[in-house]
Image (cartoon, rainbow, N blue to C red; front, side):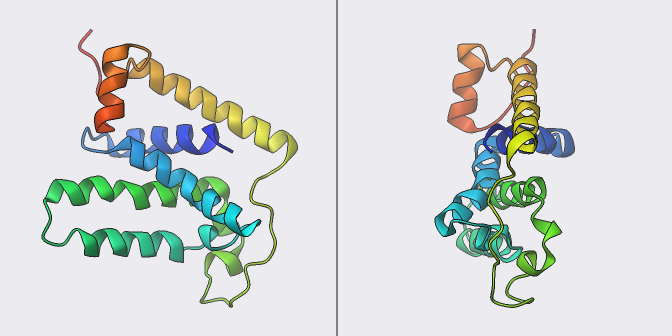
Length: 159
């Protein structure tokens, strides 16, 4: 429920984008947002729709018009994280919900999280991903960890 989304989302973005300019804090927050929104409803709802990240993307693009390019680049990490969270939650497997409101106005009543063994396995995979990231980017050391918390960037150390 937690490490699955943060660990796997950040790891996937690290491996796909391979960029020092990504704010991985926003990737992690974005990955958690769909479920946070759904918890407000008590079941899978607006957070599990394609409309949610698209609206966030539009807000980021419109609100950063005329702002520094790096600000837009940083805030684009939020909808990227949301899209990642949707993939990890399997939101696309419920077509009617995913395509809301194009497919109707009802969300259904699917549980926000998987239960039992699936949840445990996902969390273990997420913990392994976090463990790999901590080791790879020396986040167990105070200096790199402080730099990450301040900038959101993951940089390889020189040693």
